[in-house]
Length: 468
Image 1 (cartoon, rainbow, N blue to C red):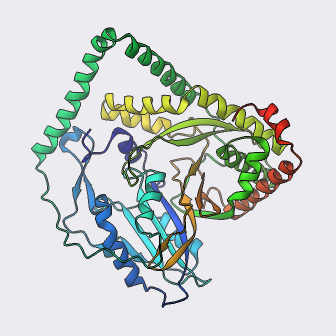
Image 2 (spheres, one colour):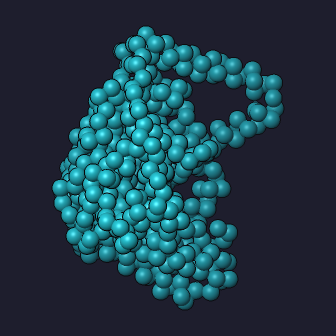
Image 3 (cartoon, rainbow, N blue to C red):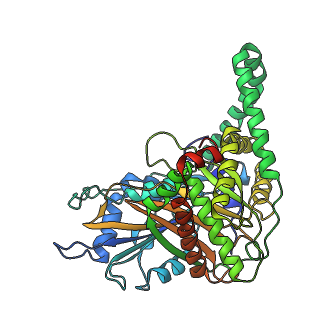
């Protein structure tokens, strides 16, 4: 597949977008202004972003549909690109309101699919930056890496020299069509050659059989029906809120070590406990929730664009009252799925989508994003641990925005900034009000885990939960 066109996975995020489900990933970040110099103005920060765009050429490109829908859309340079359309002043000094204003509006097609809102002075005196990019353009890890392109490892790093950027000529339709037809022909030829290649290589045949088994397992797991939840899986509005929670990463690490589990198990357990408390406070009976857990399969140099993710499905035991048992149940399930190579199987399933016609692929994409497929998403996105600055302003917090498809009212994301774990609880403002209460519930669930971790002997825990 040409890097100038969307992959089938990238295109799937366009297919599931709707007026109420804006498929952008994003972040809300907070910076401490410098104390030894004037704080940067909005104009200086916009110029800073513009000078860094040479590091991410995709941010000056837009999508162009191919004639007759013969292939996935192509990336072309935006001949009328203006940074002022994409780096805009925030309309509030409250970070929550800035996030709500930005994330409640879809990105405009027909121009590069990203936007950054900047507040040079929040109510608490810090600098706020809220960014979003369409999911067809980046996944969560790529979004973090691209955001990091605007940052430097020292407060005094010089800006790059101004770039005399000129858009490339737009390719003619026949060239785009020829490229799409060539890609399709290469895929078909590869499929036709596959039987002969397998027959000539017993090792390759065994590997193919293994991949087939794990792909079938991932597909069966994905097809396992979820029961739509009354409040988490109802019709949603375009309006969004982002609950913000940050804790020392050491809090999560203490639980991880006490129970001999993975850090992602702790994140899932905190999410399960928070949702459980939130539902109980509303007088509802908590139930198990089928949860999609994105898994990165990104390789190569940082800053890669497009999506390089697979998936794993985990049942969050929100019906379990004991926090230690919740964590052990999650660890047992994630360990079993890792041993069965569910994420690798999911990646094979995603690649196989490229073999089916685009209309069929769109139907599959919508089915896989429906509430019958999963109830919510919980995503753990690695973030920068080293100190970083933007125009002398030190990055202190960054909260992820994980998109929600139709009839999904909630997603939970976490990333790390230095020694802080930052949770972003992204919710539909109309169908799931009270995201602040949910944020407080997740905070309380972490406290519960810390309490039981203090009473747990690591050696006994390791025997109970098995290898991590």
